[in-house]
Image (cartoon, rainbow over all chains, first blue to last red; front, side):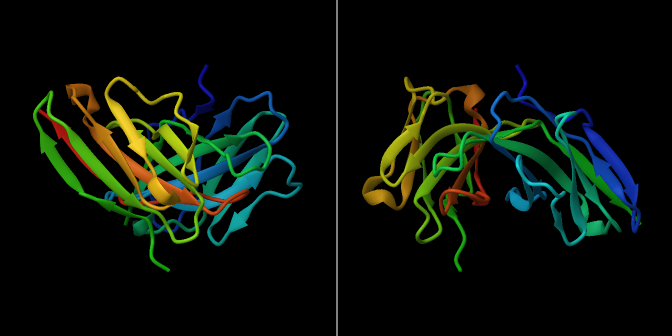
Length: 117
Length: 113
């Protein structure tokens, strides 16, 4: 069964607008973490934001926020005020299990975001 | 702080040949990961080390892939013999420990002809 589902292969947004990238997950573990990574054309995976399953508030990091809806098992990434440099692949990932050093990230298939001037 | 270093960045080989990739994690990071990313897909974990011990290698095709992390620092991933379907980017990542993100290298792109 797919653990992480990203249903949007591609998204388009105009510069300065906000965009939401969807992510749903599947786990029976009460303790898990959700991550978003950005992968520009250079190939490196860049960490954006993290949400723990027990966190009461939605995570925010600058222009990035995570819309965490636990009951719906969704963890959508919201990018406010899009910039041309935001054009990249975006991956949602989940870590299961207790907070140990043995964390294992499972990734979704990604969403390609294109920001136009 | 230096990031995760990987080499080579690009490699082209013919099927049935062998190839090795090297990774040097961020200093002090105990956990090291090798991921395989096939074009159009998300990264898939191949193997995970905690210091120099293997934590998870359940998705490593052990008949052709091997990895080691001697002395708990840098790591080598080897493929022998390579198949066409091994064409992918091999990403190395490291993490400090219990909570937090993985830091990735730029990856090694393998093309098998």
